[in-house]
Length: 393
Image (cartoon, rainbow, N blue to C red):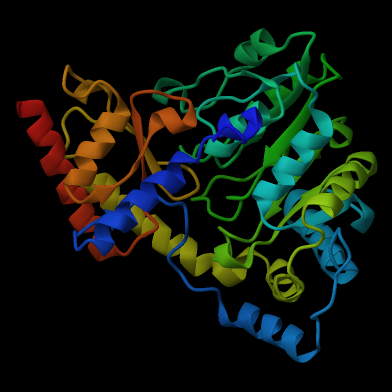
């Protein structure tokens, strides 16, 4: 281990992946484990998208591709931004990457210097913080718990900004909480940000299509913000294309070119065949996959109804994504001092989950309801049984 860099030794494996790995190991050993830990739709990629990918194979898209992505895909993404987000990004402002995670990593590498402050409101997606730590940035993390609907206030944002602040990273709909910032709430944050023009923003909108009635609004759509916001999205969640690894970003051209330069050294372009499939998805829009949201709506209610049986568990039904982020702090005691301890007990009871520490909020647990109705019912009852046992001891 001595030959490894300090940088890589300080980098953690995402807790979401770690918990999924543990549940798979237990399953392979013959244990009956229901995994509610990984953020992956359990639907298959729609046939019309697979057909587009197959066509790409037949048309011999098997050679090196442009680093920022094929022009016709970037044109399709440009149309998507106009259609869904009221944003005008030209193809030269769009970079296609191997997933939204790479898009975010490219942007962080392009913007943040060692010692810069980066605001990451908690709860946050697990990789935000580790990406910033990896390159030597300082994390400033205002916390917004259940009592705030998991959304920070303008005052919290103002208090978090320093002379060293270079970037803010946030998601809406949020992973892990499913919270969505309304237009008025985003506007109030924009008012603060406009007083600090040195602060860039990454708006992670990967869960945009998975919302339950509330209107999704992009921060870059507010007047005066487009030149300092990088809008990140992808196809993994909305189109059940996790394995295709296609993400994309829209940003000012200077930032886009910087991200292209970084990507040219790390990975070059995303898979040629996946890009051909992506064109069909992007042009189709959310209507073609609305059945997934309808099913998630039912599953959300199933898991929520069961977990409501836990007298000391607190949560709100999310406005987007496919997670219940529950406050389990009332179950902490001398034997279970952290949410990680609770998650291990719940895993022993047959259900994999992810502790809130991974997302910057102690005492919470994330359960994914991207699972079958039957498994959600079984998992919910197992969770209740485990929590009852903990409280009675």
